[in-house]
Image (cartoon, rainbow, N blue to C red; front, side):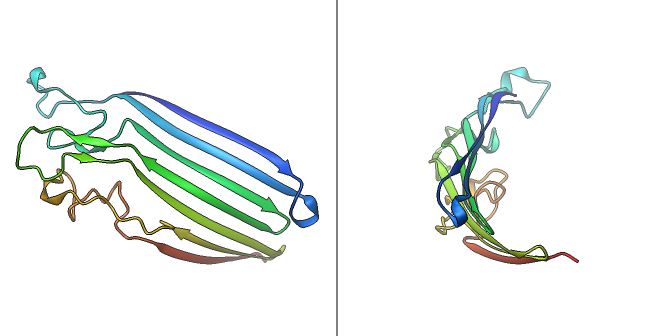
Length: 171
């Protein structure tokens, strides 16, 4: 396996919000998969398969060349809100067998949103929504090598939009 990981962070004070004390944070991290070789039978080196950007019987779960996630957060006074983004790049199936239903899975993005309010030093309340736009997972039929429910639930969101509400009390 060979790849490049990156993590970029930046923040700046912005002149709006409660008492003009706003702050904008941006973060992006990701991975560029350069090489992922798989051999299901180590004694036969000719069975080596190059799996970067592929999925299927020879490679298992999707291994996109690009993966990333990012978040933009705005904070002012007692309020913080953020928008998150997760991306899995496109992949193609490794088999040449005509029995496979789906040969390509396009890039897949999910967005999350959260807001938090600090009432005082003792109480914070948080509301968040994962899979904000209720994006469905790609359906790949019965050819999911290592997959379940006609997709890859370890990678693609099978639960749909979810809401979370939490409170933190300090005493």
